[in-house]
Image (cartoon, rainbow, N blue to C red):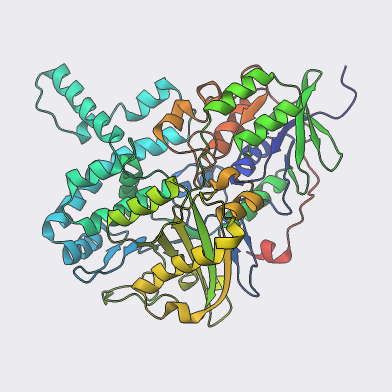
Amino acid sequence: MTTHPVGDAIVVGAGHNGLVAAAYLARAGRSVTVLERDTIPGGAVSTVERFPGYRVDRGSSAHLMIRHSPVLDELALADAGLTYLDCDPWAFCPATDTAGPIVFRTDLDATCISIERACGRADADAYRAFVATWAPRARALMRSFYEPATPGRFARAFGGLGPTATTARTGLFGARSGRMMSVTQDLMSSGDALLDRWFGSEHLKAALAWFGAQSGPPMSAPATAPMIGFAALMHQIPPGRAVGGSGALTDALVRRLTGDGGEVVTEAAATSISRCGDHWRVETADGAPRCADTVIGACHILATLDLLAAGGFDPEALARWRRQIIVGSGIGMAVRLGTRELPGYRDLPADLPAHGVHSALGLLVNDRDQLRRAQTAAAVGELPERPACLAMGFSGIDPTLSPPGHHLVNLWAQWHPRHLADGSGWDEVAAVAADAVIAEVERHAPGFADGIEHRHIQTPQALESELALIGGNIMHVEMTIDQMFMLRPHPDLSGHEVPGADGILLAGASTHPGGGVTGASGRIAGRAAIARGTGRHPGDTRGRRLWPLSPRHLAR
């Protein structure tokens, strides 16, 4: 008979997916505690003051996928203080000596006009057709993200996409099967192959390839076409910038969770997960063990396996899973800048909003060879000579991010390996690598570097140590097709459960549907935990808030 307190659920890891899972549980009246090793919640979806007066993201900056999800409405996060600004323009590719800039607006007509100016009428017409074809496919992909990955659900999500393809086959069944095989080939093709089929201009291909490559894999890899096809949805709901920084999403989740009775405990690193009678026990570094019917591992999958190992779980199963989970060696690095000016890109059209293109993802790549060379360098443990750079100047639309008269610029660059082949440590090469990233902005916006006043460098090593991103991989596990859907992070674990450990659930970027700000795996795990029972203590739903919100957080 249990003689100590047993809650309904413990969530290990206060990244946004862990908080989403906990928030669903708390709204269902379950007692839930979130344990976090860091001093603040949010993980890679958090914002801190790196420089005096600047609110600087520690990880993500633009939120693309969660705005297409049910999470924001189901958890009523707007009522909890979350406000998104539309990023419109949502992407931008700078001019070259032979082609003008491409400005991607929410308005498809405006985007096609920009493409026609830069690349010609044929590519503008092709882009319009591309959006019409790929928007329903991207919506189907998003639907598949917010449910457990099973063959049946996968078939239902994509089964109605036949009308988005053509076939020369005839007859009711022949035409139907021909269209579905065509769709399947498109979904399984590489991003580069997709672009080559649709467009003629390398300028446009490079912009869309760099957009797709934000998921991690090079666009030469199989099944990366949907990562580019997702751009079609940006004309319906563009990326969003949370007012106050990426961490404003975390703040709203914490408000929702604690307001519904849950609690978040920071500086409480879990050290083991073990059986305790008919429930689970989580030991922590602060010496305060906690017990619950359900434990959701919302940290890196390898960290969760470590916790199970410390609790006595089958070592052979753990070793087998580890061998088949591909973490990789980093994706990229970030450089956060406090500046006097935003980048002044050349040849911009006159019909832009007052903030210009600074609401956009600055896709600072003009040909795919730059992407290929950078990825190849990283594959052999070298720094790219010219890193592929993504520039974001969101202080242009949100002045709360920087002091008056100053700006915050976030630069993300790929590809950078966690371990360098020549044995150099990242502390030795960080400044050189950051200089190369800034040089890419300077190439398209001359004079930008002269206005830099503050600089914070996040190398793959820094991402690993600060945000627990093993191997410096912001996606936790590689986003290649052999590590996605029913295979992520391993076929045995893809159901967000651990075989042989009833009551241990999984969430986070390591699990389906992968990295990025989606809230999807948190929703799946939270709903699965709710479905496990009606709650051990339905009358004990209020938790003690151990992470107090500051007045500034409450005011937003």
